[in-house]
Length: 195
Image: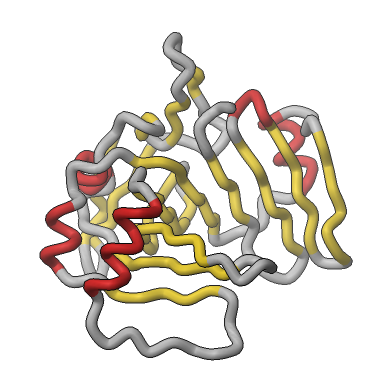
């Protein structure tokens, strides 16, 4: 069910779903937030969220200095399950095509010391890739659910790794889910296709 809530700035869409409402379909696909990974198109996601997201090219440099490209769309201030959240959708596009997008961009000023760069893309590129499936979803709630709420609703994680003093990574492979749990910043729920 989708309900529009009118606020001071712009229309906000409310989805009556929770991050633990993950459906595993007969064909092995996952559906979360009314989006089926690998099937739902970016254009359909815009309809689900009743708005266009902000589309950018994300370039990450790994430890071997290799560049990894992702085309992402970010939807800020969605209301999901009664909570304000941000969702980032990753487009299902080949690295070769993403490199071509990078080569076509104007004003590619980079910051020398960062491993992650975000570049704005023009409307033509946005329109060209509207019929591209969603590859993965990152859900970032505005509140901290807490460890017990996560365990109660998702179950026991297959793995719980302490990455550092402020961050844990929990794996739920049957849901294609990784949860980065932070002490000092919002948690991140990353949904990806089943392997």
